[in-house]
Image (cartoon, rainbow, N blue to C red; front, side):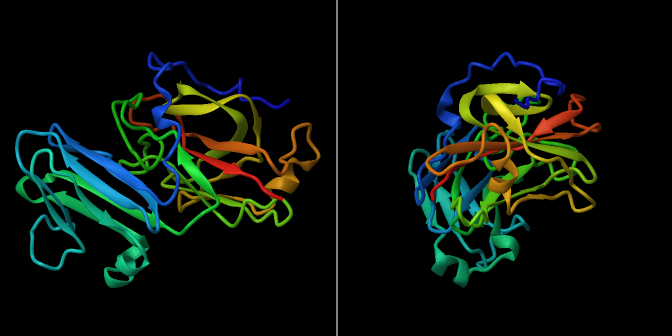
Length: 281
């Protein structure tokens, strides 16, 4: 059995955090963003085509969720919702919306008109994929950071964490599943690992590990100049000769551990969010 016990990780005081953040609602669904303490609690989220984002303001003052990066309401925004206290507002990011309001990489940055650059968020819309996201950094990151769409912040310069998303299919026979991790620091050693069990958020370097033991390694790779690693296709074949091959009917959970000597809080390593795949024939 392969393990990660030689890696540098510590248990956090919040290791027993509730399991609420381990799973993402079934697709397509409503993803809630709470507006509290002059911030978007769900500052960066990654959703699928067809999902709806719902903002609810819990502050005692008015805010807005307004698409754009110039902090000015000029009428060219893909969406603009005033957010009075306690009155939810929604936007559905379906194919028609994306066609009408195209943005590079389907990333929709937004801000609060009354509070400008002090309140910002982003929504990245990805195509339907074979699995589900889990184990985001929010709301209690080990380094006082948070990201509802990825792992905890690293030294990549964007104040984002490493983000794992899936492509291809969950078919064992096709073996075309591809896991892509972006927003990594460049030129770092990255070690994917998998497991069938989940645990509460457990500190691993600068981030959260939610894949429970026993867990098993996949081949290491390097993030290169672009800060991206691609795992697969061929993940099933990679595991076929081991003692714990991936089989149809099983659900496997994946994360990526990586080195980060310049990490924000000096813990030198970090992990991505998790991605769960229920494999089919």
